[in-house]
Length: 307
Image 1 (cartoon, rainbow, N blue to C red):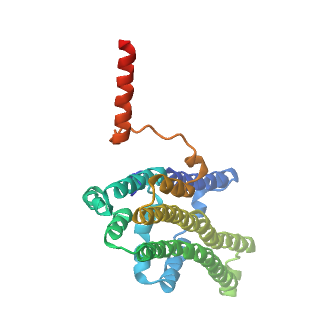
Image 2: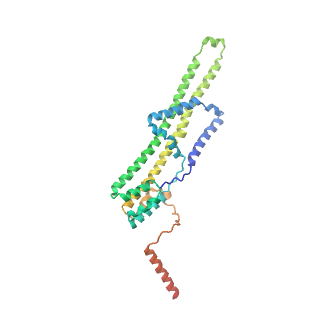
Image 3: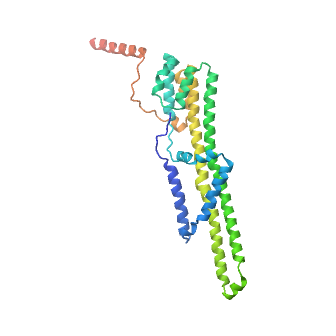
C-alpha cells in the first residue's frame, strides 16, 4: 500500500532554490551587496530563539524528531488510488468466492502496512462494527502523529518573525546606547565628526534590521511552507487509508466486487476516475460459464464450415 516510490519531491527543492534566487536577484538589482545580509548574531537570535521557544511549547522528544519529519518533505509522493482499489476488488472477489479465510494465504505476499493489518483484523474479527472501530482507531492515531509534526513547523513559523523583531529591538537599544554614550571631553579633544557618528548609527540600524529579515524569511520561506506541505500530505494519506477502511469493511460484509469498486471510486478525483483503464497483462482465470460459451461458439463455427 505504500505508494511512495522513494523518489525526491522536486517541488520542494525547486521552491526553496527559486525563493532564495529571487531574493538574491532583488538584492543585487537594488544595488545591495550580499555580505550586508550575513550576520552571525542575528542568525543566532532567530534560529536559537525559535528552537528554544519550540522546546518550551512542545515535548523534547517532538523537537528531536524535527530532522526525521523534515525528510518526509523531500520524499516523492505518488498515491496510486486506482491501484489500491483494484487490489481491494481482487481481494473481495477471492473472499466472495473462496471465503474470507482464503485471504490468509495472501498475507505473506503483502507488504507491511495499514492494508495488511486491516485484512488480518477482518479475518479474525466477526463483527463489522468492531472491525470499523479498530481501523478508525488506528487511523486516528496516525492522524495525531501527523498533526504533531505539522504543529512543530507551524509553531516555528509563528515564533521566527517574533524573534526577528526582538533581535531588531535589541540591536536598536544597543546602537542608541553606544551613540549616546562616551566621554564628552575625549570626543571634543579628538574633534570627532558628528557625521561619522550618524553614519555609524545608520549602519547599526541596518544591521539590526537584518534580524527581522531572517525571521520573516525563515517563517514564510521555510517553516510555514513545510508545515503546509506536511498537512497536505497527511490529508492525501488519510484519504487513501479511508479507501482501505471502506474496502476492508466491504470485503468483510461480502459485498459484490463491482459495487465495492463503484463505491470506492467516489473517493478518487474526477480527473483520475475517468481516465481510461490501463491494459492489464496479467491473465485472469476464466469462469466455467465463459469457457463453455466459447466452446459452443467454436463448435458452431466448425459445423457452419462443414455445411
